[in-house]
Image 1 (cartoon, rainbow, N blue to C red):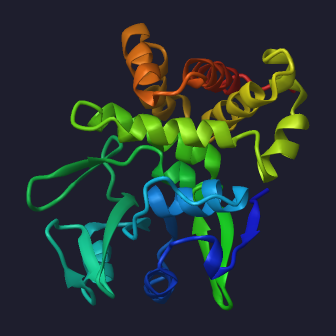
Image 2 (image 1 turned 120 degrees about the horizontal axis):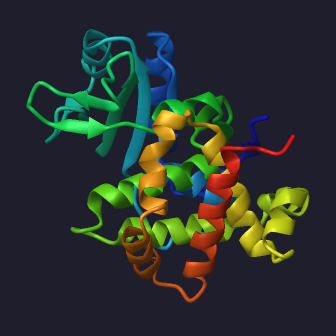
Amino acid sequence: MARVFSLGRDQHDVPVDVVQVLDNRARELSLPMVLIGAAARDLCVHAPLGERPPRATHDVDIAVAVPRGEALAEFLSVFERARRVHTVVIHGVEVDVVPFGGVERDGRVAFGDGSVLDVVGLAEAMRGPDVVALAEGVTVKVASIEMQAALKVLAWRDRHVQNAKDAVDLHEILAAGSRGPYEEEAWGDLAALEACDYVLDLAGAYRLGALSRRAFTAARARAVAGVLDDPVVFARLGTQMSHLSSGELLDAYARGFRRGAHPLT
């Protein structure tokens, strides 16, 4: 069941007017849309915990399910274009519009300028999003905390040579898995608690791993497992997460991800 959050404008820094424009456009064209990236983290990780994000950003990233390239072009056609083929500007804010669905080939989307995006995890995020009320009349689907964790693993895989920020973000997500509204969920997950010797923060991370794995098919889960199951890559990720507890949280997440492939009945 999707979580539902109702947040006041003073609880987050997400530009509501921009999100509303995007949501209206998606509804107009009957295209499923889910908020991802930093804005999603602000709404489903930091705001429910009563925290401000450590790195403030007003950029917005969305994923849109499109059956073909023409549908994406139509979605983008009413907006000011920016530096990249799938980036637009709305009210002065840059928005990355990432397509998935019918335009994918083996989990990738190719654009006319020759660029290619790996979009594994976006269809999975769309299947079980959280719902966030940002203001009166503005309600948006947002990638859940468990899917944000999986997407961060994949983002780190692709970008960690240039920047370690995705690893730091992953630590924040895993640490939040046992706090605020997620604390009760963690306490209620007996399998996660038992797997982690009843250490709550580890159980929260384990639970996120198990839930995110269940969203993937076996074939598409390999993208995340490729990071978690490679000892060298896994160790590098843990180091770049840069917190004393990062190694234990990441280990719990990885164990949960493997457990999620074979959920207890």
